[in-house]
Length: 372
Image (cartoon, rainbow, N blue to C red):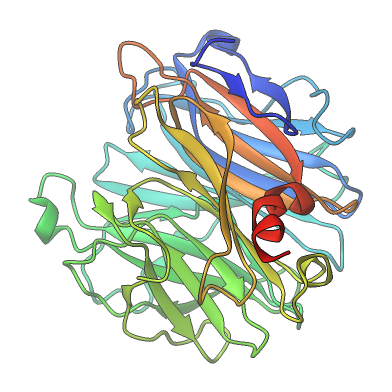
């Protein structure tokens, strides 16, 4: 099998978007959700041109059989006049069953507007867009002009609050050190009827934290885990008031440094029993090497102590790869959405998009062999 697309044993793999599908150059920047009915929803930018601020459609595919097959593509937004629809970020309400997708309209990497749509029928149809840009400017003391959600997925807390993370910066024309990358959140306490500005992570320009995920700890604290560019540790910040204020961000040295890339993170409360711990299991998906390196791999790491340490780092895809997200299915299988292969002429972008399905038992097999 080609090193460009190597299936790892014990990982079922399906293609969501094949190379060149839909007449676009590449699919990049993903959203992932599993509905209360067990439907998998995969969102992506369908890049007519591969540039980050080029013309992009925003697209969705659904799978009702655990990722074995995928329905025809849906257009969430169409780039009819060069619009750059960007950063789809999914959010599932486990109480109402409603699904949200947040996204941005990127204006030349200088500024943006943010919107969301809602589905009440498991992702078959979607509402008109609602704009939330004004919320992002509340308390914006950093001079940010570009705001992008997620990507990947937001979070519903145990008490029902919906939380959507975003990242922001100043004009791309500024030197990187002067763009002041940072993070904040929006939240809803009425199942998405209304949204409010949450807290902003204190700015530490040298960290460069941007694309991020959220997890809730057993204590009720909320952890934001963000990408840092280069070969760096992830950046973390903690909220003790459900996202209204955040601690000073710092590098997370508990996890090995990896090349900067959007990565998936999920906390699975039901996984503790399988992993032999009273705490939820954390699942983290990220690249092991540089994106276009043939020796790269997408690995899933497991923590049994809420990120204090990581038990295993297991390859689920081998070859060039980049962005990913991760979720747990109702049957306790684990699905990982991966930007796979190397798109030419710009190999840092994905050639295709695949879904890998595996189990916690398989991910922990080496750990169990070591402790027996």
